Image (tube, rainbow, N blue to C red):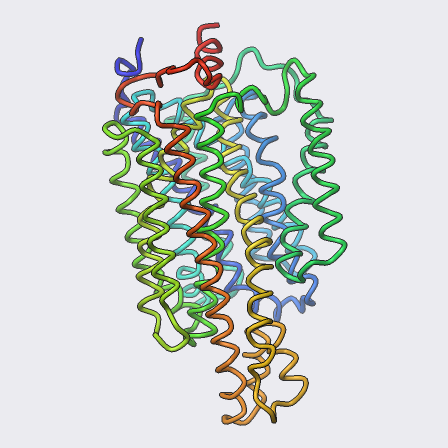
Length: 529
């Protein structure tokens, strides 16, 4: 049976997609509502600064660390089974988080949330690939899945802000309970079970090595963004990379590895995964700085700053709905390349915003960049999943989300460090005389520090302190957006060159123009065997 003759999904599968989309949306939201809830829970639980950082970071650490393990585990024990186990664990961890009585209890509950979240993402995506065999339908389903992640990132702060205005801080953790209960009830009836019948036992040594590689690297880049170039985070990154090399060597020797490195022999798989990494690294980082600009430069509250991102959310939804319609007409190289080029235009618009131009320019630039997200995420994810043998769908799905988590960590760490250097060089000689030494030092560190220090100064001195700080931060954002635009344009050219021979999904398997793409050879041989 060819790709064009693949069985089409019916009503059961489409209802199942809704059941899968809801937890995907809520996992994305859960990573962002904490930004607003942190001041409230810190006061209620008397959390110190170190505990506050762990409350924020532990979720992402556990999510990134366990994605590869959970993707492979789903291939072994069954993706529906793992999804339901993860949904139950996510619900329990949400309740524990909401009713935590100490900072330590909340950190532990958030760690459990991250591990549970790591089961949900690869399971939902791999089940979608199994339920929707028709290329056009699968493209649309993946578009819905990818759109849930993008929309969740944008509306998370909005929903969090609304709930915190009416309820206690723990209410933000209960958002996911209805969706998880719905999944537990309807999942067994609507979702098929899929597993790799030939999979061996889970290699626990490989699991430990993967965690020992991923967690230090994520930690290192987060610390670089937070505290600059310090010895400890650099050592953590180097140590994680060294363990990662050991992990890779072990996978090459295993007959049934935790991570099948043969997947990377596929040109389509590798380049699509790289484009997803660059998109999350650059677009995700720029979005974080835009949120800071709206709050600290434009003076908007967190809720209003989130509302300023709504045009971007609308553009993202439109993009994710249109992309599946284009995927069976336009080659992936040109579709992904176009999405990257649109994002570049958005970043260039952002460079035209000033410290006094208001939020409109920033919102328009973000909306344009969000318009390019659909072709990148949907087409890239579809290529990754489609290039992997069906029995490895869980592993491939895990790698897509792992690339996103790594991308965000890399972006915040690397671009954040560059941005900090730009900010400090800009403000170094810009502060006027008469500013108290402590306030001046706070302003030289970060704009957030300048904002806090200004609250304790007379109006005239506060204005004199904040004006150069806001201009310096705007320059920082301009540099980050410019670097992102240059790197994304380079990525667009690479995608067009390397994937130009891959056909649209409606034309079946990608062609083999020169025999150099071990990508599809490996895939086809795996499927025939």
